[in-house]
Image 1 (cartoon, chains in turn green, cyan):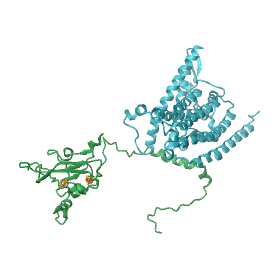
Image 2 (cartoon, each protein chain N blue to C red):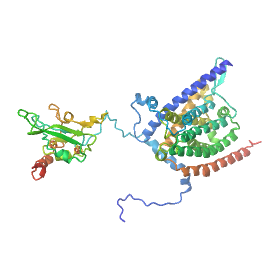
Image 3 (cartoon, chains in turn green, blue):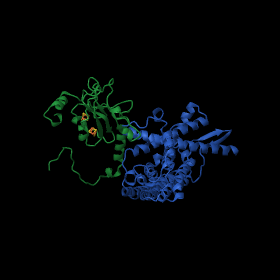
Image 4 (cartoon, rainbow over the protein chains, first blue to last red):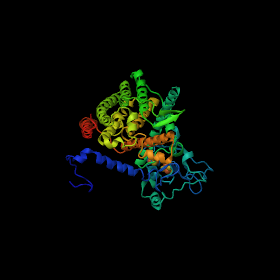
Length: 189
Length: 347
Ligand code: SF4
Ligand code: SF4
């Protein structure tokens, strides 16, 4: 059989030599190794003060984007909820009234939009599914809570603030935009 | 005479406090050392460098819910950890912690009791420690605890023999069973390790087994027995068990140092004391500090081994005890006897 790697070793059960049977040389070798490790640099990252470097496309806390005028992009089409393998997303749609054009970009919008962060597996499929470039996962961490219900994040926590935009340019590359606007794919029709 | 009793009472209380503090910070040291050996940082949040961590652990232990299983034997269940703790604290009285000390115009030995059968007493008390484990494990009425208790007692019995035989050779060469005298004999001459290297090795291995520490921590092997004898214990009763282990470690380090490494003596001590012009008390204090240095080294050594070696299998443990250590210990006695006979020390 072809070995998968060149690191495989044949296992053999040979008689141990007297030195091996004594165990002491092996023990001393082991102790030297552990002692050397005492002076190596620790791999610890001290979390609240230091942060690990995140990948630019890290999939963390979701954001619901607004467009350049500050209107919410989400149109409550429900595609994200349908695509979500963990069934974490629920929403209720409502019709936009006269005079609310500044608030909501489309004629239909999400009156409530909730993601259960305990169900979410941060797969990012909701982001892929969204035809309106409304939902993105970001490199922010989901904060810890004490109660289960507190992990159901509503629009207050998901929609970005008008004056405090969340930068998703690293995720929204030209490839992504082309993909989203390509009418060949059924969900963009 | 009153002075004598006052001094002894002070010494006992001090010993009690020191044992507890050393044990407390051993838990901290263990966590820190294991962390360093595994390229981690270890506890560093409670206080500067995490120094208050033992206190935080203690408070945590006290605050935990106290659970006594319904099916357990309540009296014995409570007796178990008490026994473990009491016996752990008892052995310390025999250790000579330093030389002579002058107080109120009298001279005392820095040792609570110098029994002429001190070695026997130490053996008796340390083997009593296994009763705490046995009773606790049996009273929990839990299969894992029982397994742990059985292993603990079997291991204790097998290693006690080798340990005793190793000590017999030591007693032969020193000619006394009093710990005070054993320490005093290593005054100017060489430490006993030079005369008894094999005996020391056997004693050290057996000490690991008696302490139930890795690589011989059969009775509490987490991976197979879920904690062994203390599976059912919670809150401070669990704390007492864990604490007793650290006190035992401190005391056995002290015993090893006294038996084989000259106790409070150090090389060229008379010359150094004279050169520095130290008074008796100061010289004793220096000796005690040196002794604690040696003890801390051995505590470190115990931890070092624990974070280096994996656990023995149970049958390997028994094989090592009965088939290697006991014959070796007997051989050691023979060699000691022959050497003493050749040197004309036997009469
Ligand atoms: S990231 Fe995945 S699991 Fe989480 S809400 Fe989106 S689709 Fe659902
Ligand atoms: S897929 Fe996009 S537009 Fe549709 S409901 Fe989800 S977030 Fe809103």
